[in-house]
Length: 345
Image (cartoon, rainbow, N blue to C red):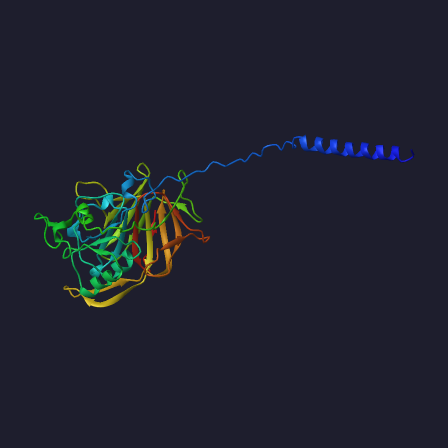
């Protein structure tokens, strides 16, 4: 009799454990509140042409290579054709102190460019980082070989004669012209677009690097034979070019005017070649570092240019060492001899 309550108590306790276990098993799991993740909206910059920083009028042009045309700037060559539609122009001093242009077309094509003239030693290092196709009238074999070593596609007058024509109303040799669309027919499959040559301001930003100041005019004596003057046109937002005191235009009368102008001072040396007139042929050293003056948005700023190798793109920094950003648009680069005394107004 004394054990019975104990047994009954144990049975009751076991039943309570079983019921508690069943109750726990049937209880729903605790509700975990859902987590919410906030995803920041992504913004994709609109595509821009690599050599101007502007939105393309035709997106099909974005990935295509540049076409570079060597253009005459002797007095007999003016007015030229096509300068007003080039994305970038490089100006170099040649024999006798006259200058010639390397005109770069990527965002648009031009039916007639010229007068086309011969290659110089400087050209190989200018075109090397740009790549693409290079048009010229001929030249000293050593200079042509320098160009071939850069890997650009030779579409000169010897390699692609059908793209060129002579203007009978002009005297030779200042009368050879070329069609950019005709040159593009020689583009090999897979030829890449050029790299961006400059840094550009964000939309709506104003050109105002360290040390910038407003100016209306800059005079650049490239030599005793060629003096360039750039005048600010606030209505058009462009710098207009004059050569030896005369406003420079293209055929048809449109002024030569660019969004940005860079005066890059570089050393020149004699190549050892002599032209038919007896003048030594110079070459500009564009690899290294030096001083520059940059015009954009009605302002001028002093800069430092640096290029580390023949295939590298030139960089420009302001007085604080910050990369200099240009106004999106077309850019003219003058390879001015060291000691060029620019004057502003």
